[in-house]
Length: 427
Image (tube, rainbow, N blue to C red; front, side, top):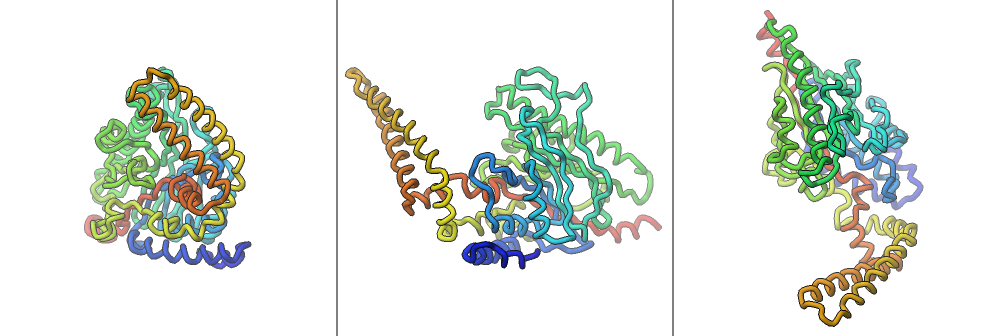
């Protein structure tokens, strides 16, 4: 990590904040993610970095110090699959510059907006001191007989964001990784959009499992058989392990690292997954690290919750001026919202004035009226820059998740030293 770059921030208070928060973040990473060990283990993971760095929802762009928090987290991985890299690659290059010369990346072109791809890229970032890119890189295109159903229910389309597959090697360990950002659609499991989501997971698992089966049979009669292993990782928009979105992976032979808690900010959604398909008994072992035991309540499941260390409730004081700057910049949008709320309030008052209104209906309308008034007062306080409202905005709005991400990174530790096995089976 090239920490010296922090000295060149424009504002001294941002420099001080960055140093303080990096220390907190580093202590958390030390407790929750295993130390990297060259030629012995591989720390491998996946992370959806929210709209990196598109600012499509206008909660950004990210601040100078945010790139250091993101880089610090990435620095604990030998290889990390990334989702939601946006059109402009300068932010990614900025993170790589902070990480240092030994880090490299490989990414796709942007996915079409109209196809549901939101102009996103998929990619990998890796440390060349541990991981070699072995030359294979490609976006998965489905054959005609495997196409996915469209939102109208007709089977006729490719992926919204084409899965990206690359080959790597770390020590003895050879592996091919496909990273995905599966189409979300709608929550209703009877909708065509949800079925399209399941179709995407099903088709990528089916396609990669066929490749893995062939790999396992290649030279399988030799004493020493060290084939490529296969992974599918990323944002699957999987509901949970009891849902058909999860079954779509399992039915094609993929095992999934089960998370006891979700990988979103409030730990309720299981969208992100690391799944694998072993092609031989000698392939690899997931290390049963002490970092993933119940001794650390926040990391039973190999998920790193950076919100325990940065953008905490107690750290509001460090970001108050940034929240204030944001609300001043967006004053017009808060005023527009209040105009709409005022119209709603007048409509509710008109309904309440009806003589024969039932008690239950009146109670419901009064609740709606109070909520609208409360929201108006909150917006007025934001416009006025009142501290209490700014703190509520900091804690309750998605602003913090657009500074780092609304997804948490997942990790596994893999044993990559097969020297003993080779000596036992090859002579």
